[in-house]
Amino acid sequence: MATYTHHLPAWKREEVEGIVENAGRHELVGLVNIYGIPARQFQQIRRNLHGSAIVKVARNTLVEHAFNELGGYFINLNSHVSKYSALIFADGNPFKLFKALEQTKTKRAAKAGEITPEDIVVLAGPTSFKPGPIVGELQQAGIPAAIDGGKVKIKETKTVVKADQAVNKKQANVLAKLDIKPMPVGLSLLAVCYEGEIYLPDVLGVDEEAYKAQIILAALQGFNLAINAAIPTSCPQVTEAQIAKAVREARNLGVETPIYEPGVIEMIISKAYRQANALKA
Image 1: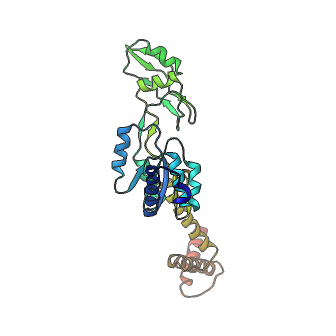
Image 2 (image 1 turned 180 degrees about the horizontal axis):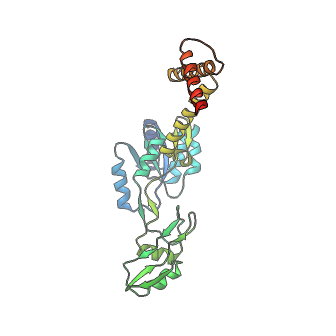
Image 3 (image 1 turned 180 degrees about the vertical axis):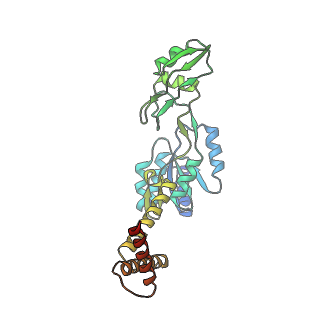
């Protein structure tokens, strides 16, 4: 530890040593974004993850000292350390960790200046508001509103803020009054080390149903290719289908040629009978 921390006060060295020890005990070492999570909810998330993951808040400089001490691919994690990042230690694989963290998320109202991760859409229809200043507030936020039957009504469905755009103060105030909560609250995985590789959210955010559908489609296409191209495989289902296809094609060839062989001659006679009846008709 002397290489990077000999000049640090004792309490800071202990902090770095604790990070290094945790990294040695767990298969996954990563960083999560804790921005915007209220203290009470943060503690609840940590309790929910108890037994499956450890979340630790530490000074960025100490985190960087620890990653430098660990060396190797851990040093690459330094580029993902941010003002609002915290450490996470877990076992298993990064895909399961990403999914577990996503499941802990809830929604909250947007604050002025925040970037929304999704389109914020206000649906047309009646509201619970009585006539008053709220009509003007809605209109100033870009939401068409009017008085209808003694209540404020939103006249048409409107996308108030598009994804990856900032919410202004007027929009934030109105959306809060409408109880629209577009901002996810929870731990967002920034990066994680696993078996010598760094995994980022764009890789870990797999749509399981879509992925499963792609695998099924690939299997069907491979099955059809093997049968139609007569490619020998070790799969008994493919072999059975290939033999059945070959038998059908051989019988059809025997009928069309015609070839008078057992198992075919009956089909030749049947075909001739149908043709005779058609000619008669």
